[in-house]
Image (cartoon, rainbow over all chains, first blue to last red):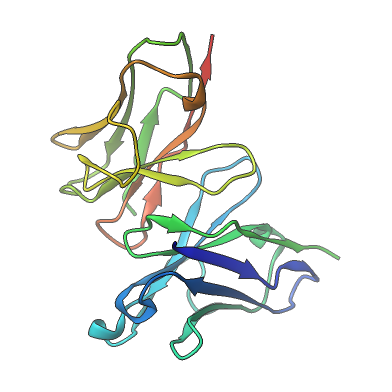
Length: 116
Length: 107
């Protein structure tokens, strides 16, 4: 069974940093692109970026809206995906999801609140 | 950015009815279009990918179609469990973009 489990969310002050993790299981992690998507409460999801699979050199792509502030990485020995978020703003408040492949499987989400 | 204009924003239908939701892309996206269903407090679930392909485990009453840059999700024989918010997503170019969503309620 494919499982994705995000962790690391919580409350952070504006200008702060936070790292989210996504633990993957049930599939060959290195075969898949991995994505981060966020969704503010009551709004549509927003794609943040992805990191490619082994065959494509684990390179990354970002939404210009977060490029330079957010960094996606993966630890293929631990089947872990990460999202490092810096210089956080109130508008980054959302539920953050990881997803795999054609975005056919998503985690349950991690809530991030940016507030003083 | 590619804009995905989704309609209607909401609709109410009776069980066993046929429902259609559409997304209009602002430019050609080929078949790089997916449909998701989201229930309250849950993550989105993939229904359709590549515009017309049914995702694993999704009932056959869900179907997708394309006409040029207009994409449609049809739910035939609506069931009570089909309530939720439906989103389209284009994966043709960066940034991938979602439609604003369609809230489906049953009468």
